Picture 1 (tube, rainbow, N blue to C red):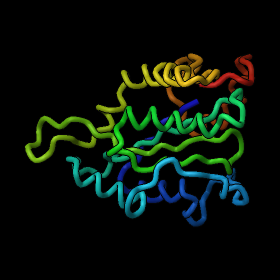
Picture 2: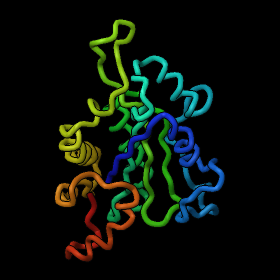
Picture 3: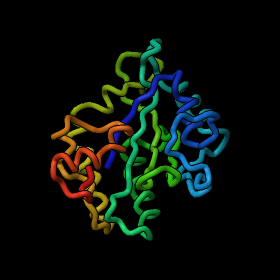
Amino acid sequence: MASLKKFAHGAVLNQLRHNERTLENSSNEDINPERSGDNYALFTPEEGSCFDRYLERKEELYCYNRADVKTMAAWIVTAPEELPIDQQQRFFQSVYNFLEDRYHKENVVQAIVHQDEGGQPHLHFCFIPAAPDLKHEDFSEKICANDVLNLNEFKHFHPDLQHYLTAEGFDCCVHSGITREIGGNLTVDELKHREEYLHKKGYDRGVQW
């Protein structure tokens, strides 16, 4: 259902361009360029590009001067297979609202729904993981993925999202418990191979996590 990726500063621009389908020579063979016009954004910066917004917000936060610091994170949320097609757009808008409230609008960098890849449509929600900073006098917040995306967050993310979507009137499963069995949140590549995993384990094809 949802996977998480984290990016160091040097990888952010290419990732944002990849999501926008403006990256030349993409290595993703699943993209169908003829359908890229069906993709749509749920968040657009008031001024400049998504990368401009990322840089502007990053300057407002304390950031450790190390190349390996994860300065951007992204939840990739896939539409459940049992969700009717005519509810997908409202589903993604609801997921966006949940994520914006959880990680705060000022930290949102990009939110794009992809409909041009094989399988179900999915949302890329990119944000800067900002946490309170109690050490540096000139900053009230810092970039710290370890504080924002910790084990407690992983434990509660899917159940909280399920509760929110159920309250919004969606009758679909976004939390099945399979995630824990296979060892945590899946990467995008692992999600693409979930059918093989489910087949081996004997789960129904419609199960999501």
